[in-house]
Length: 443
Image (cartoon, rainbow, N blue to C red; front, side, top):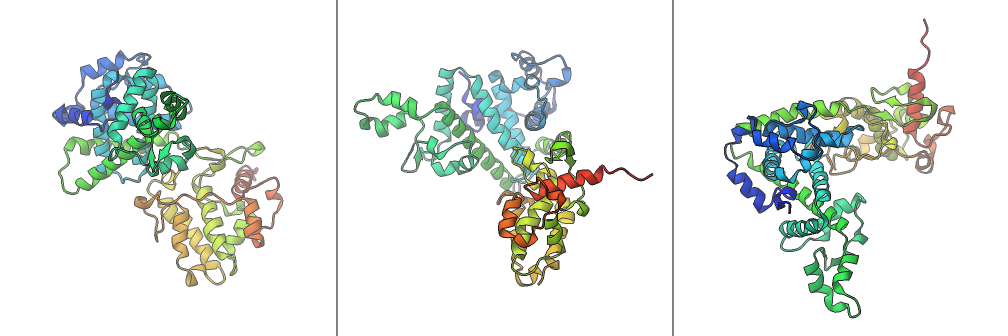
């Protein structure tokens, strides 16, 4: 059976492996045992020598490369990273997990895209590893890991509110008793066996609690514990001297992650049809639909708040950073497209604030709190300015549909021919920008 630390590197077994590892300077040295295990991984592609990690530091970078490619590369090849699901590499993998957690903690903010990338990929990796374990052994290791990740012997349903909100798991999928999620057979039988007079309690357990639910919950709990671990390391780093090897890995990641993401960082508007796609870039006011032009010019009292905070903020931010939002099933944040927030601060917010000043009366003169609401709609919480440390406290608000504009801001809805067949001002902008960009140029 696979080791517990193969699924949960934060287990007691995993921590013991770290204590026994030894000199961290070795992570940059070529490791023959690592190479040998990788090359003998079933289905691992070895035709290209560059696919094989030669050292622990090399493995760490490839672990992040896998996370980026898995998420972004349409031609992703699993065989190039098959060793990540090789249970024989559990000890090496535990060491690399802890190295990455520490390097990420000292180099990036807890809410950064880099940290999110690693935490989310850990959840994905857990599920892929579980899928490769034979069913009977998988059931045993899931129960063993669940025992370790419980808090005070229980799992509260409230700890899973994020995954329930994402719709990957339904509240109705869970068996809850007094706020506790019931997952393991012993717990189920202790609580409910007396309630089944004419049915086998063990059979009812198998019917009511599916393996998929247990795997989803296990994955989510380890992701949460990984985030908490990174947070603790970050707090400790202010008082504890960090090993130079960890610092070096962090500095490598700072360069490596943006470089890798940039290979796939091509964002397009989902205008579709004969108009093709519009690439994200500098905003073109000539392509703004009528409702946006009117908002930028200034809105009178009565519609100012919704026009600036709801309509313009979402339109300007997505049109500039991620115009293909309606053609994508991804969950994105502003920093995914604007890592240092320079575009947001120097292009998007000035446009929104200028439009607010053009209102009658100027929006912020009598309602200064609306600046906080604008920041909130960009996904940075209820604060007066954008700050990467606050990102994720609120959601990046998606553009209003034409139908909602007609209902809530009818004074701004004056369709022209560019609006024909369009149901969102962002799509209208994409169509019009494409047409303007492809007009024949005069000789």
